[in-house]
Image 1 (tube, rainbow, N blue to C red):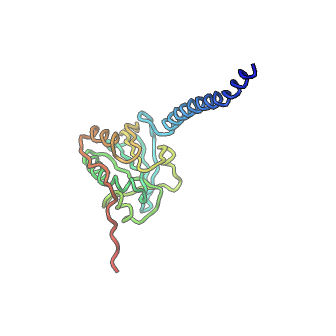
Image 2: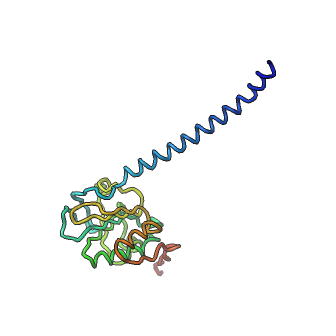
Image 3: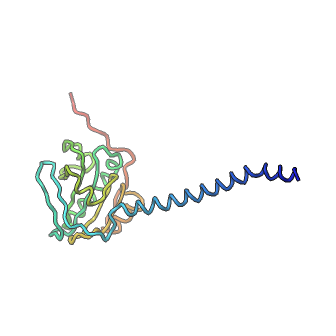
Length: 198
């Protein structure tokens, strides 16, 4: 009888360890499922309505956009001049912006960071007007977090698409399909920086 009790007590730590391991696996799975639900709830989903947005141009002019609008639609591209993914996404953004402008869309590159225009050009290309807002109203309304982040809004203010991240894989295919364009994909390394001469 003592041998049976000793055998059970020797196996008890192993049984407890296995039960603990199984419980941890269940908890990890549950946490991942909750995290994806939270992430989906936090981004602006297609079908959401946007009534108005208040921007400020880098020249300081206030720009209020109310929906419905005369433009065919509005593309908001949230970026940071120091974001490596934004730099790698530059060629994609330039082609998409040209295409949509030719179709009558309003293009609004948006950042919270204030830099000279030449810093913005490294990410957006030349001649693109950049918008910001000091009170981060646009960022809150559109639920923007990481960069780059791209939102397409219809002329009536309905969110048609929300592409989080750089234009690669699924985002790239979705954008190409929606607008009938070919995008080059991400640049492997950011374009070389020009250094001012002495």
